[in-house]
Image (cartoon, rainbow, N blue to C red; front, side, top):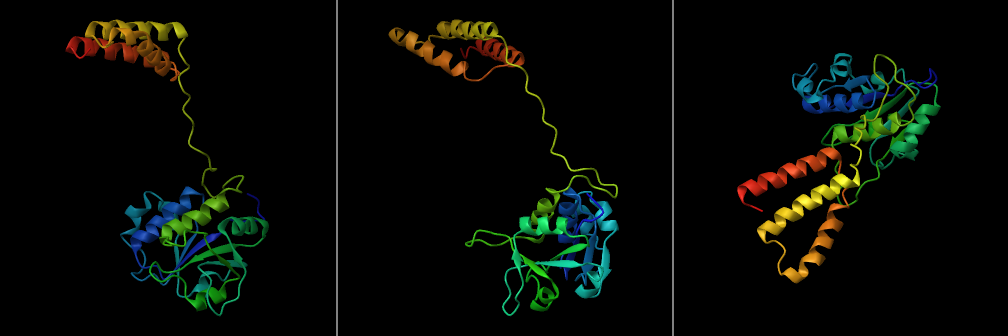
Length: 249
């Protein structure tokens, strides 16, 4: 992150439920955003329902600021993005979240992503204050996004272009991959197959006898598809022994 492109602020206009404010904070912090601004929250602020819903995104909630109007909330921002469908009578450029994220990173000033109330979305006057509309391409047969979902889409697209995060937030990273156990030598698999075949013979599994070779071939083909590790094979030996003791095979 360079000084030329500060992180965008998230502005919730007239949010209705504290729980949704908390979920928004969680979505923001997932992708490195920490500055939340609230415009006339219906139930006031702080809201006791926000904390539990944030799942630990306390740094976002603690820094949340409340404003009386949208104009006040974005007074220090140079570019304002209204997240909404197209509004009649409002002619604005329309971008996808991905295109908006690229534009935010290319601008030197502070940008704001503005979201409307959960039930009705932004009003025309709110959108008129913005410079650009951001619309999420979505299934036309079911276009229902909740507030936190919309926030997380824009935050994620912004995060894809971030080299590093400041203000006490760790750099974004994928969860560490757990290495798989290496495959066992083929000889160990042969011992497992032999063990299984001996117990299957005892149980009378191969019937009729003339089908034994074809069944063995199918069994071997199945077992050699998996790439068993040493621990996998040890576990299967234990399962076969346990089933033999129980009389299952």
